[in-house]
Image (cartoon, rainbow over all chains, first blue to last red; front, side):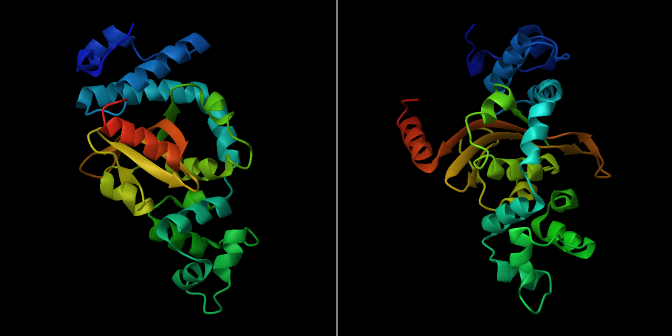
Length: 138
Length: 112
């Protein structure tokens, strides 16, 4: 069934009737249907109930996709996350050293290359600076 | 934030080499640990993230040579800043910059 944005129900109950209640996903076919429902609701202005439905459905999808997400997260080293954030904020290794209060200006490049792990105090400074969870750097 | 895609994440990531997965992997680790409640909290972490006009909370992220298009449902907190609804990031498209610009030009012209 093809559904246009304009056709979509705006209430939680209506969406349950249209796409089904967000319940545990047990098969590829159910995962496929859930994925289609998510995309039908994506990239549009939504009501609060549509958001709520989307979040509930996504939680079921996330449970099903958990092994794949974990595999993807394994690719992410703290150094890779730091490098991405520095790129995003336009910072060099020397800038990072300055932010961390390192006068020798070497700590930034060592953290970025993964040759050194940040200390607890540095993790806090980085998390505050980049407005992210400290867990990203551990 | 939860992260979901239309197909399974495994299928989605299978199109990339291990090296190519490093950047989205780092991006996913940052997003998974985040609890963005609004545009300001998202751009505090990713200042280059761009909002796509006319598409709700669609955002694009630049990851090296690629552009990641997403749709964000912000987390909700109560008056005490306690999380009442986890946020969500839907991965919509992963393209190189040229493909992204081409698709956007076509969209503006009403061809897609």
